Amino acid sequence: MTVLQTLAVFVGAPLVIYLVIAASTLLPGRKRRRPQYRPGEPWTLPAQWWAGDQPLAAVDRSLMISGSEGGARGNW
Image (spheres, rainbow, N blue to C red):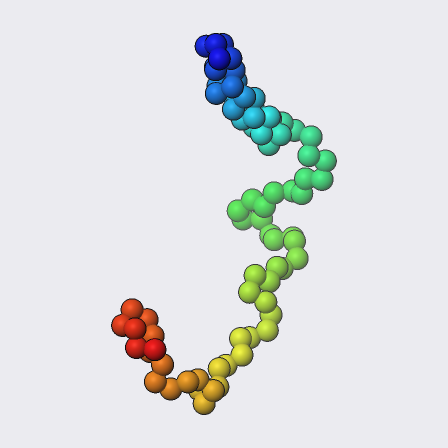
C-alpha cells in the first residue's frame, strides 16, 4: 500500500463515518419534534412508569432453602 492509500483507509474512512454520524444528529430536519421542557413550566406530557405500577411480591421465607451459603467460601 502506498502512503496515500494508507491515509485513505485509516484516516479518511473513519473521518467520513464520523462526519455522517455527526451530520445526522446535528442537522435540522427532524419533523416530529416535541416541545422541550423548560424548568419552571408545568409538565404537559403524560406520566411514565419506570418500575411498573404493581408492587413487588414478597418472598415466602418457608420456600427458601436453609443452610445454603455458597459464595467465595465454597460451602454449598
